[in-house]
Image (cartoon, rainbow over all chains, first blue to last red; front, side, top):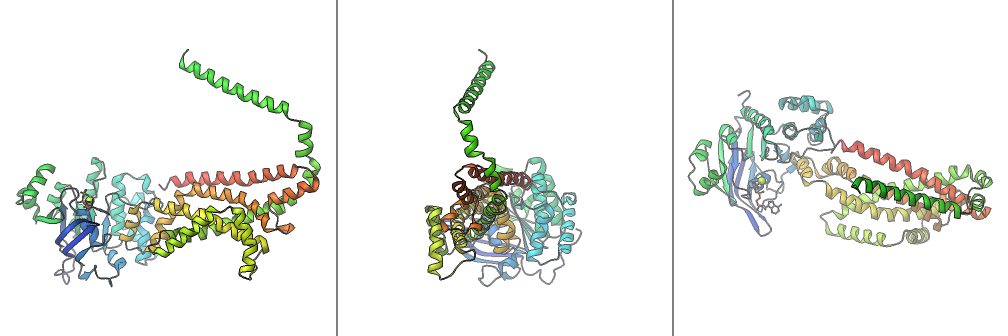
Length: 254
Length: 261
Ligand SMILES: Nc1ncnc2c1ncn2[C@@H]1O[C@H](COP(=O)(O)OP(=O)(O)OP(=O)(O)O)[C@@H](O)[C@H]1O
Ligand SMILES: [Mg+2]
């Protein structure tokens, strides 16, 4: 551990606390009463079959998806409250997408500085320094002038991680960050994420990488049919699952 | 017969037809009449330099005004059409359907005569200015649809990425969505621009002062004055001189932008 997060004063409040969350798309109720939390500095891996609502839950946490019912409290702030300044909350929650979603018209450096300058009101110089620091962290400082289309998928995803980190977030959400990558590029991205975890970053990771969940996760949450079915230490949930649906899911993916 | 031989034969026939057609046209045409009517050097000398300094210049100025005006109004209409507020969408839809459904010449005519009366206001540029207003209104309707399509072609993930970084909707629109949308619609926008260049020739219905005449109007006037068609040929060449470099430039820009995709 290089630098564990020193928020002892806040460590009693969970980073993310979700209570009885419901989410429907039209008649389709995708989340049916989720209770879920992530502690400060904790790495929680969310697994489950396709369509079980993992992405929806993750996207509700920074309100890319509007919850139908229930509350979501991020570092003590109820983000389902109408009064909450969402844009402000979002600068504290980094998000990494399956499809990277880099801005194709901007080079790597501008991808990393744009939101810093707009949302954090940082000077050009400061934003550049932060950007270069994070590019170095993901091993891509030599790609600062490249455009996203000139990078491999793995490099793009590492840039996307660096872009999220450049906002100095308190926590990071990952939605299947390696699912769109060629197998030989997955390792580099997972390595960066592992490093982040070791530095004490609070992380919520939707993933199909059971090896990563086992090695890096502090807790594994298994979702199915819009509810949390089972959760616990990775070795317990993955090694000795209790619930029938967990057993059946794991027998298919392991 | 081998396929390659047949192909070569086929191509040879195509060339032959082309040459025969060319020879036929050249032989049938009355070259003396063409020379006197369309390439009269005296008329050419008379046309210059006004055809460049006044007519071509006016056409370019009108085009720029109509295009920039159409872009601004078109952008506003496109944003209204995508607005979550229903009345904005209605207004925009009605506007676009109306002005796309009317002949440009009718709108120009209408604006040139109706605006000064209806608003007791003389637009700058007199009746030409009022006519230009009409041309802006028509262009905006087409450009609005183009811009809307461009905005919708930007992947949803781009907006989500920007918003997840804490960027406000307006910043997201101007720094992330619109730059990408305009890259996507560069080809159709070039089309609109070329159409506007040609549509400036409709402005004559507004009634123009001599110095306000565009290329076509200037050429028609000179043509009837001299009872000779040479000015029309000159005007045609001018239009091509204006549009060809423009389309080349856009093609070059497009190649340049590929880098960012
Ligand atoms: N925007 C949307 N509109 C309508 N239905 C949606 C929308 N987003 C998700 N859904 C539906 O919600 C359900 C859960 O989707 P979600 O993406 O959360 O699943 P997931 O667990 O992430 O699956 P996967 O592993 O395939 O990514 C699916 O049935 C999906 O069709
Ligand atoms: Mg998903």
